Length: 275
Image 1 (cartoon, rainbow, N blue to C red):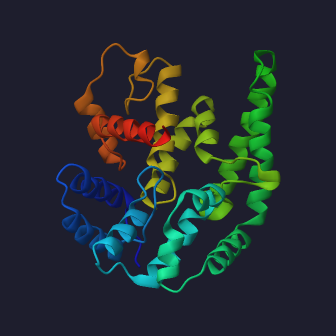
Image 2: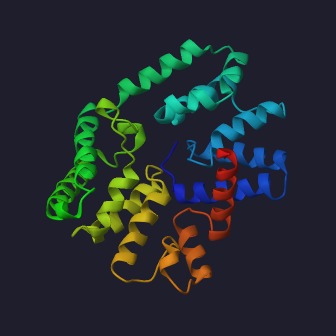
Image 3: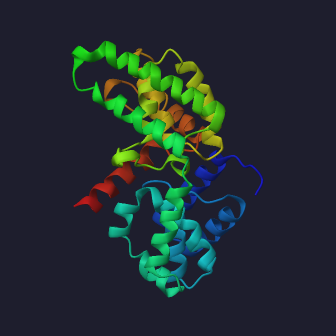
């Protein structure tokens, strides 16, 4: 596939989601999803799970979703969350239905783990340990600042030599199972001297589909909050007395994220699932 702008993809996904949840038109949503996934390599965003939803609902409606080819394509998209996903999903039944047993799925996940960039996994495992170890005490603020500068340098070096360190390059769990959500590291770039560089550079990775828009939004709005600027994406909204919701919703759409109203609805649905 040729290089495409994933901001368009993300906005299409949210339009399709409204067909599922608001219009209750599953067949129309599946048709539009099928067309979208022909143009774009699918993502399977956290809380949205658009490709997984497309596969499972297509099967229920006896519609073509690409069979084994799509099921294989889903595996690396859920592999970063594997130890949790495999406990909660019913997809193993669907895999078996199409002739793919659980041992083969586990092997595909193992192959995916082996394909990760070991140099980056090693480097970011150290970075995340470094990032967390001095954040518990205010007395270590100067040490924390030095650690953030080291992580800033690591990120800039990685962008230059490898591109964005997405989950498809480094996974979500590093050496000794250290948790490595890149959004957390980017959040701490809100105070970096290189913030303006990150604010511009990271937009390229949203467009390439490697960086989830929410991680970018959190970095930008944390910076705005810290430096008494107007919120751009409506995060940390409890710190602001007035919100220009129309402007915020437009800013969100421009990077491929849904509006304030839809975000609230998704969070409420997540809480229901947790009960």
